Length: 86
Image (cartoon, rainbow, N blue to C red; front, top):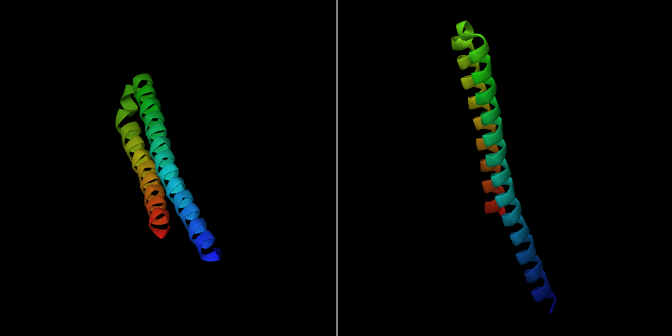
């Protein structure tokens, strides 16, 4: 009886870990999409206002987008590690 209850608790913990990993990966993807969209939109506005600064704005925007993507990739990897733990 007790062993069956403990095995059931393990299944509950496993499903919670899998759900948390899925939600975490999804939120990381959504967050990075929003962040990169904002960077692109603001960079386009900046280049439209000052065309002579387009090269510098574009370089900065690409660096920022790479950093946002790196953080999102890190979050997805952590979510998958959590998934494999349970």
